Length: 315
Image 1: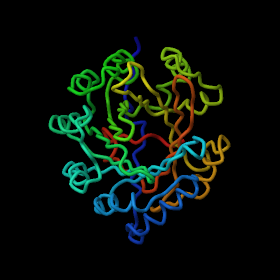
Image 2: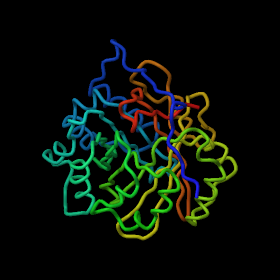
Image 3: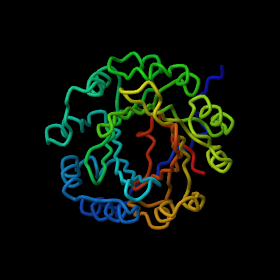
Image 4: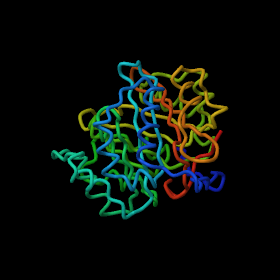
């Protein structure tokens, strides 16, 4: 059984950041996030977004920030803004809970959010649905964690443990865990993989093994430089819910022809930093459907915020 290896020196590391004139304030972020929502044709509720921005103001203005939407039909389409902070001392979870913006109700994911940071170093990320509030908490592992160790934590969904062989075969290490408080699901992300490690043939096999919808030839061509895999599990089903393959693109090469919302994002997405405008293209597959996602790099990617310091190559 082939074991996929992590990326090494062939993953570029970006040091592009904010210049002296690029002062990022909450007022600017509010304006830009509302423009993103307009481009996505997604709802935006200031009464939901503002408390999260204000509670974590120091993190929003100093962290890596991305903005994501999907090609779901407009009535179902959402816009998410997310921050990733590389400071191990940052504790957004406690602050969000104290502000009444994240509620613990006894779900197993809450145990993971308590026990994992007590056992291993963690950088936190926060994902906010601009219509509904805090959606996900990410735990990013600067020291990659073996699949078996992750699956051993109490509170992990049995569906994830049932897919241990898949997790071992395609990556073998976990770089990020996302806990989705809105949907009561969990995402497990592999480490950053070198271009070409996950091949179109691998993607075809993975989707067939999972009994998911098949990728089209065009999708396989677009995904031939995918840099990791992430899988979604639920505590209420034995199946994997979804698998997603991302590729990082510069604006000029992004596959905007696939959907008008992708074209609008690439053409007009606000950009808070100097340097090139980059985006991540995702194709998500499930048992009955597929859709695309786009994430704009609102602020520049930094090596410290990526597990093991490896930033995916830009295509």
